[in-house]
Length: 224
Ligand code: DC
Image (cartoon, rainbow, N blue to C red; front, side):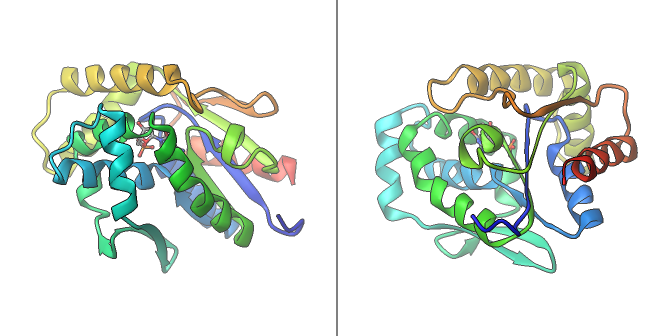
């Protein structure tokens, strides 16, 4: 990695506000924002479309030889392409979230998406968010932040987001899904969700978006 390139890794559980906060902070510091969850979601959507049981690791791994997943950036906005098709909208449904969590536990899937993430980070000043960015993908990132909040607050944020988009969901269902995904993401054998030892933990429970973004910017400026 070139020394002039600055990478900021932001990891944390589902619904911690990583994408909203990272996008706003990236804009403020002039870096690109890379949402790596979108890559796992695209692999999950492909498996769902094929009618594959996303918990069946062998079948999921077998889908990889037939697909290409790419990220493109237009006016700073990321789009995720599955075999050249823009699936940025389809990857946001609750079934796609659960499928992403399932396929992300498959070692072949993580290996398949690794180089793409590293290449983008090597070429761009970026804020990259995910679960294993500071621990596995970019262990040399200049700044590493673990963004978290209580499960109830995270579920409420996600619930409001889904309702605003017109989804018909129950809060209880969103909370249960989130607790299940937290468990999956932090207990899988490969690259489990955990704070990097040399990172900063930022708990945004009780902080609004602006306060969270300001904290992130402060941490970035302090480290670079
Ligand atoms: O950030 P997200 O909710 O869009 O991520 C979707 C799923 O992908 C999540 O359940 C865990 C997985 N993921 C991962 O394992 N590693 C990453 N770097 C990003 C996401």
